[in-house]
Length: 130
Image 1 (tube, helix red, strand yellow):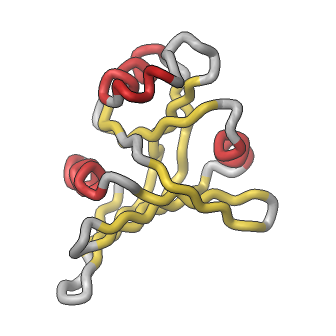
Image 2: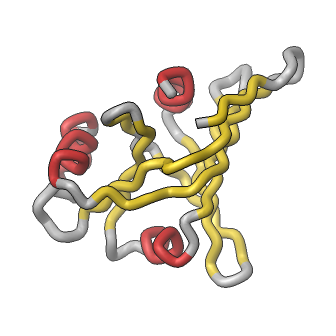
Image 3: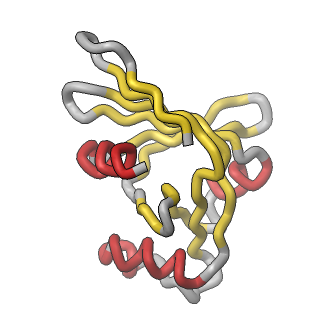
């Protein structure tokens, strides 16, 4: 999990794909956290992405670090614990202008299960199941 987390941190921005009805929706994200050995993302409950994840928790992330790219396909699960939200926000102080672990809007999800594939044009893909 550490390798996946470090890749996403280095990339800075990743793209999260969800499903809305029968259409894919992709948007940039930048929040990634490793908490209790699990990979977490953060959003607000008022956002469409939150609604999409609750209806269909199957998502995919894609990021590029300049030489390699990663695709992470998996299932997200909400973690409503205050400590999970606080850990995320403590790692992204700039989010505190918009979110707070007690605001009723902050939401974190972790990958319950997934597969990460790290690829490049010159090496064989590395597959990590978690």
